[in-house]
Amino acid sequence: MRIMYVLSILIALSLHCQNNSTKSDMPFPVSNPEEQNINAGVLAQLDSAILDNNYGDVHSVLVVRNGHLVFEKYYKEYDRNRKHHIYSISKTFTSALIGIAIDQGKIKGVNERMLDFFPEYNTILNNDSLKKAITLHHLLAMTAGFESEDSLGSSDDYVEYMLNRPVAFEPGKVWSYSSGSSCLLSGIIKNRTGMSAEDYAKKYLFTPLGITDWYWAKGPHDLTNTAGGLDLRPLDMALFGQLYLQNGEWKGKQIVSKEWIDESVKVHVAFSKEDRSYGYHLWQFLPTSAVAQLLEKNDVFFASGAAEQKIYIIPHLKCVVVMTGDRAKVKEILLKVIPAIKN
Image (tube, rainbow, N blue to C red; front, side, top):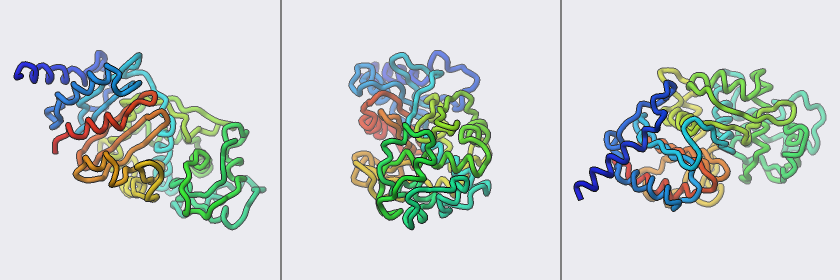
């Protein structure tokens, strides 16, 4: 038994050090899981189960604890330097950009009305009292109340399309997942900063964090696709998660204000879907969820993209977990990782 335990530890130690681990742009110090009070044997068993396809099509799993990278594993044809399409995790990056713009005074606050951001659109359809009541807060929390936006992708102006949509519900009353609301945020950033969301991210988010390799798709009129167009390395996804874990501070510089982090991770919608609540373009687990039941404190929040891309942040455990894949069983993986983390 002693030999098997030692072997499991040695295997786990090798998992967080890939062949290219000496790359100079490594944002985290690399650590033995046990040094950060994580059961290395559990991680080794998890890796073996993923290799046996027990969790579906997993592309990467990364665990950061106490600011140290303790587990970094890639599967199939993926590796550290290959970017992954992160789908709607792009929305959470956009929420951070809105926070930065507020911090800089470019935006007055979340109570600014949607229509005030777009004076260039002189004629707006369905411009009733409900539409006039929509604020930035409603766009971030996805409670603007728009009718179906099924034709958004085929429109030749995402902002105009959304501004013209009928409003079916009183703003703030009904949660409905809305990529169109996220596209409006792209227009807001462009109008208030004079920069595209991508350029603004490069200057005030990516460069300060040391992120140098990304792709961000554009829509009509070169509008940055803030609803889901971003490709990033999983390692840089973990870096973004660590920024939120550290209340917006990175290497002595406040990139996003703590006040914005606190506001954006707050529960603004008590129930969104399944076992989740919703903040400002990110999610939380309901207290009754299987994940929350494993935690001493239910303070976990996360960014989520289609096909189960995830950045989980667990503040009281000082931990960030990143997963990418194609509809992999990521929640089941998280339920294995959490018990391995010792307080």
